[in-house]
Length: 536
Ligand code: GLC
Ligand code: MG
Picture (cartoon, rainbow, N blue to C red):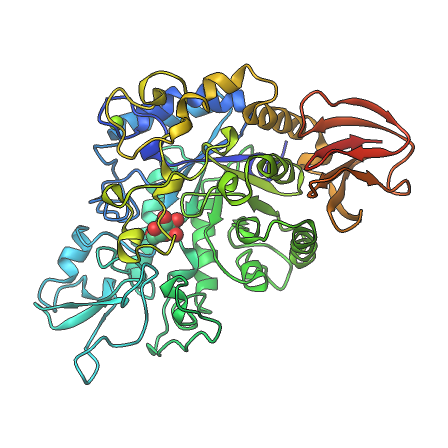
């Protein structure tokens, strides 16, 4: 098996640590809780677990504001608790991926405390400090991704510092070689402790314009939309200098790869398709020296129609550089859950889509049991994005509610009071109940994951888009002589698959509906909103 097999052919599962499993009754998920649930991940059949930030943090942005990159927040446990994880994962054949947050630190990080001390300090240049504009206002018109200006004035030193997110998350200066080296040392710290890779937070944000030019207005912006879309992020994201940094980062991680297991970088990149592709880091010789998996979020934003998804898949496949590994994501801690975006029935089709497309799938915890967004009453709101831009539907608490394990109190998530309310349906929608039910979302996920694992056509095979009419998304996956055809009926009516698309006898190897399997003679009729995988 090649060293790259696990991240190319496997499945990644995202754990939001606050909400996965609490072990000490404080109502906040933690590392010992995650350890306790590793067997569940094996039962589900995934290959790698990515854990959102677990480092010491004032929690202004729930761990994405880090005050020490090389330790564990006491709410999540200790470094000793962490050190048990790589071995526990290895024993189960799981890979461990951590979140790396290089764009900003917490304003409580010692580097920033030093940087904002009297100006002559050696860390001043580690962050982005600028004099006020002539009118005393912010140096540029840049806006924070959470709304409001991306600059905060520091009375003591008379300058503004830049922050792409909260004012508690000052941006590091990635043009400074000392910053780069310090951050690469953070990667090495965790690689030495046995992690298999990193998901890199807002990778495209790291470098800002050398001349600090104003961003142009976004002509497509309409009031009521995400306020950070008011300007085009021309001078604040995806600067040309990013390309060298991506290659440097990759080298740091590659140095820890072994013959039987590569270390991986997964980049969080919200960019148009052709710009996304640049982060694979293709050299003139055709080598790929950038991040192995630039996250492909297109299924999160897509209007849920067969024709739309057909277009997305075709364009993505066509845009990939030679040899680049594709990947697909259905949900994460920043976006509404799939079950809420499209409904429970269509979420079953989405599961089949995610797990049969060519490319590494990333699952978000709870989606495998059909967890939906939970409306959070204003008095219980936790997410700073919702607090900064209330009422626009941008808040992220709804998709971060505690995992629903069982009918035990608090769904088996905690012995205490959960930090965020549970969904109302936790007593009827949980792992314990779905385990024994062949019709459940969990059983569907397990069947599809097992199929993907057992079929080279699915985990490493070729992809060919087929035409099955406007409401049926169809593609073939093949390896050697094995050819599987995936047919997803997006319509609420029965659909008959064209006789010229399939031979007269096929075998259904998976369906989103329970109880359908075996040989089909003659025409194949898809039930409303049914997806099938057939072998011919
Ligand atoms: C990323 C994270 C998000 C966080 C932001 C700032 O987009 O996924 O949760 O708020 O970066 O770190
Ligand atoms: Mg806890």
